[in-house]
Amino acid sequence: MIPVSNSQGIPLIPFSAMAGALRGEQTALEYECEHYVVPAFSGADFLMPVKGNSMTPTYISGDIVACQRVPMSGLFFQWNKPYVLDTNQGALIKRIKPGSDPQHVLIVSDNTDYDPYELSYEDIYAVALVIGIIRLE
View (cartoon, rainbow, N blue to C red):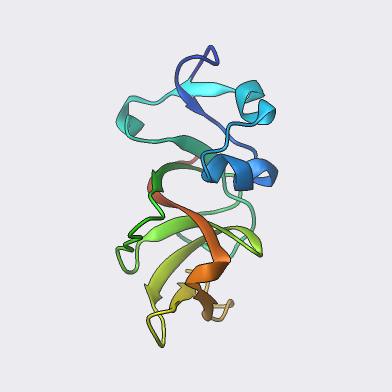
């Protein structure tokens, strides 16, 4: 990752600021974020650090994921792909599977210590597909 001026590159959004950034709202905080050029992630809208262990072993706390916003109109999920969701529970990085009915999706962690649960589409405010990962050893 190469840091660049705020007018170029992909913003690295702190996890705590994800809600506004994921919805595409431009906040002062996003303008103050560090921006990076990562050629392999040319389609990414933002970078975000992973927090917690619910997605281990795929993503571990401290990893940085590259995300591409998904339009909410006509929302279409690629089942079992990892997404960042802005929800009434805050920002979540999870896999998405079909729910028990058309109004719900199943939220699945890679860490089997976390049980899957259903979430209503109306409780999802914004969505981004995880398209890549940066991990330090």
